[in-house]
Image 1 (cartoon, rainbow, N blue to C red):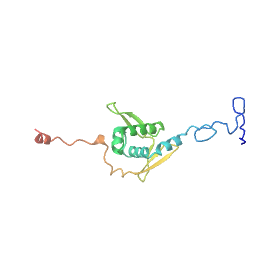
Image 2 (image 1 turned 60 degrees about the vertical axis):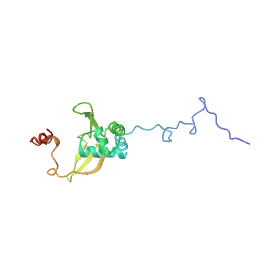
Image 3 (image 1 turned 135 degrees about the vertical axis):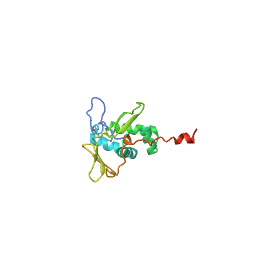
Image 4 (image 1 turned 90 degrees about the vertical axis):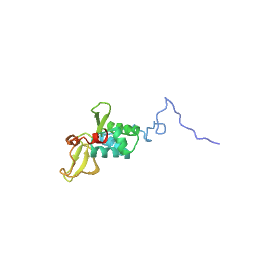
Length: 161
């Protein structure tokens, strides 16, 4: 039985295509670093992360706990995916007022509303259309900061002595 002979390998033999190093993806060249567009698209390509972007674009800053409740997911999964979005510069975070939690938000320079009421996410090199159509400004509810609580008429004292 004749076995095929293999060319010598080792430090003294020249690298041939058969012995060249193989990088992830099966290529002979190292992977290129991802550009901003690729990072954003990879981050937004996951269904849960896309829902997070849509929710943050529609409703504004949210904590990870609030997002987990709204999206019916676990806190650990939500924070992991928020960190992926933040690493891709798709979202940003800041401490909450009590400094115990972080609020995640889409950077204000990214949010863009069109004249027909559609909200876009414009990252400069990548434009995402989450399909959000906002009501006209007159029909929008006022921000939470401008809402005043109802006057205290003492009804709770009558119910609970």
